Structures are given as C-alpha cells and as structure tokens.
Image 1 (tube, rainbow, N blue to C red):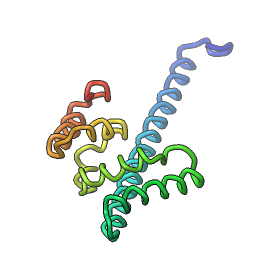
Image 2: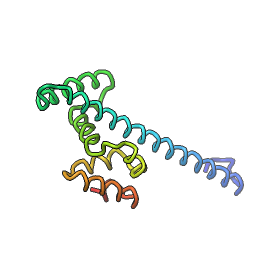
Image 3: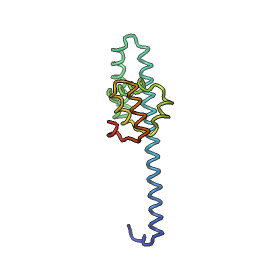
Length: 143
C-alpha cells in the first residue's frame, strides 16, 4: 500500500475499485473473444461460399486461401496465415449454425474451439465444446 491509505475505510475503497477494474477487464476480454469467434466464423463461411462457386474445388480452394492469406496479412498483419484460414473454414463447416454455437459455448475461447477442430468427428467435436462450456474446462483440460 502506498502512503496515505492508513485506515480500513480507505483500504476497503481501494479494494472495491480494484474489483471493479478486474470485472471490467474480464468483461472486455469476453466481449473481444466473442467478436473474434464471430469474425472467424464469418470468414470461414465466406471462404466456403466462394469455393462453392469455383470450378475445380480442391485446387481452387488452395489457391483462394493462399491469395487471401497474402492479402489479409498485408492489410492486417499476423493472424491470417493459410493455416488459420483453413481453421476458420473448418470451424464454419463443423459448426455451421452460429446461433446454436453462441448459445452453447458462449464462455469459451478461440483456443477451445481450435482444440476441438482436431477431432475428426463433428458430432464429437460439438460434444466436447458443449461439455467444456458447461463444466468450465480450461483449454488444457479440454485437450
């Protein structure tokens, strides 16, 4: 404690303010995380939609992701490598109903979702996410 906070009332006041700051930071982190997940889902959806218009899907998809990765990395920096773009696409394909996703796993992070994308069976992946959300599992526990 710094000088000037000598009595219990002042100490209680400072602790109350610290709690408010910590709650605000948690809420901000949660809001940012939710927006990130929403953004990644929409990117994945748009990639799938674009690929479905391509003539030779497999080769077209690979080229599309590589070009998109270069453009997004130039515009926004790290985070849009080809691996991440493939994950965004897989995320949309595995969890193609965003409303259901948000109602079942609103308290999870992108790291939770990315971990479940390694599960080959989409039904199992959804089960793991829902269970992790209900049981408040850390990413390590989910892994």
